[in-house]
Image (spheres, chains in turn green, red):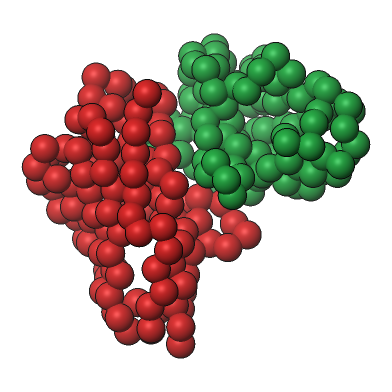
Length: 111
Length: 114
């Protein structure tokens, strides 16, 4: 079975550009999570959805970040405009009964 | 907000030695999960503990949940080089659903010298 699929795996962009990260959760999972990982701050929960509805977005850093889940098989995390401090690995994870299945992550570098 | 402290931050061991990492919460927990992340990889679920005083084993790994449901430990017996990675605890506060918001600890980075 396919796991959580994220794209792109790597993204290098310049400050001010828009970045869109994509995630396909495991089929049948009803919860989806976006995490950000940095050396300084560790794994931070940005937002999570249950049955496609955003439940808690208190971890979203600021208005430059937005996330959508238009259907059960797709989610996006958008950063506009991007800044160098957004450089991190962004993980998407899905869940059915509480345990998280993580994707391989999207490594974002903002120059 | 939820405070989760993991100690130690780093642990270097010789292959064959034991290893333990601890996770402490400021509040009572509904459950705790443990994850392992290999260098350059993504976190992988190891186990979930729900009951007070619960002990679970997976081969050389032993997981414990404290009686007060505020702390937990992961113990590895006779480490191997394949145990290298970062071990995270992730918690759900009491009153939260097990399908909801998980807060991750800072992780313990384990290196194993052959």
